[in-house]
Image (cartoon, rainbow over all chains, first blue to last red; front, side, top):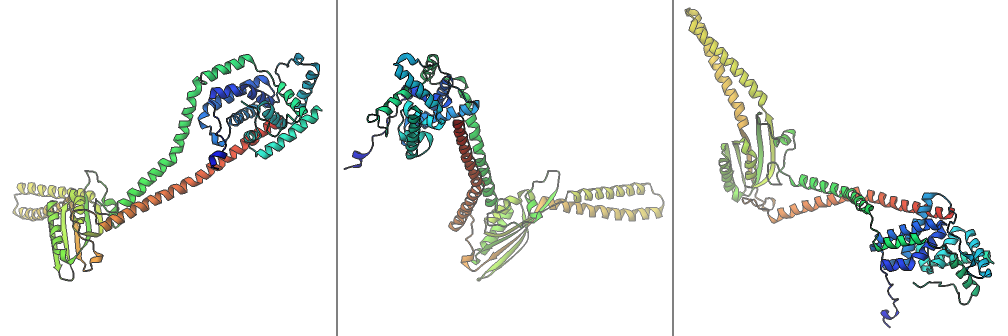
Length: 167
Length: 342
């Protein structure tokens, strides 16, 4: 029963191009949920990827996952942008074609969109990290600078609020 | 990249699974043009002309960080130099200067137009067995320097003894001579003094000129005198004038000689106790004990420098770290505030 048999596999470190390809869309969705402006989210995502590219040598796999590192950079960039603009940006992205699904699906998504908009920003961020970014609780904890337990609790509360708002 | 929903049971909760799907479906579409532009920037490695500004700014910060290090190095050099130069004129570090104003000014370089009289008192210690040889070495060293022994006295005995010398050495060789005398035996004390005699020499020269002019005037008057009584009177005055010229010439010569040659009083004391006296160091090399003492002084100076640097830098580092931590917290708080306000 050596330690090697129970040790977790080393985290896979993607090349920057692979990381970009795997996360760009999700990261955009996450940033858009923070800044609530799809076009501004494009700028923030570009800024975040450039910052990550220039700091890529500083990434330490022992300290966390690559996704969490990238989302942390994007989060800071998004919040800094919000601070600079000092405004509550409305969501300006093109309306999603609600007619793509059934009438029931369309109605449900309108409800979900409204429920998301009504969420507390911190809860909305948690939902975005989880459902858009697909981050684990440990990765969310890393991005937010809290413990994994706290991240799990907060996420559970946020999802509960969302479910209640959509009910 | 796999999506994690760790503690969310999507399979066992169809409602939650549908909610997740709906949330994902609400994501805003990306702008194709912006997406393509970012693709291209990633492919090119974010090449941009303004990138050169960042390293320059960092170099500036690195330069600022180097300032305390430079100050520490300068302090180290100053301390080591001040602690290492225990003697004047290259005499061994065991020599002590009197520390008086005269002593401190002795090493000053006088302008070539000024006349400076210098003197020194050197006390040496040796063993009774080597007293005579060391006394001979003092004389030989003086003669090699172009000086002479004005007076000397040697009292040698089995239990001890002493020797005293009054040396006259060329002033411009004083420092080198003191260094060489310091190698004859162990230096227990060294005092040096100096006196600017330029004004004395100038005044003496002026007085001599006056005396000569008076003498010359008397000579001319004597040549013109025909009256016997006046001739006798002029000759008497002329004799006094000549004496005055001679006296003032001698005085001026003495002043100039004081500047030309330096007086060195050397005392050589033989001490019976071997423990109290280090062996004579005719070859100028350090004894093991002296080397150990020197190493101790160097280590002490280095420790003092390190302590000084730590005392200077530690508060700065603490303030800097505290400031950085505070800024980080402020920035984080501001970001969270921005999120709450979003």
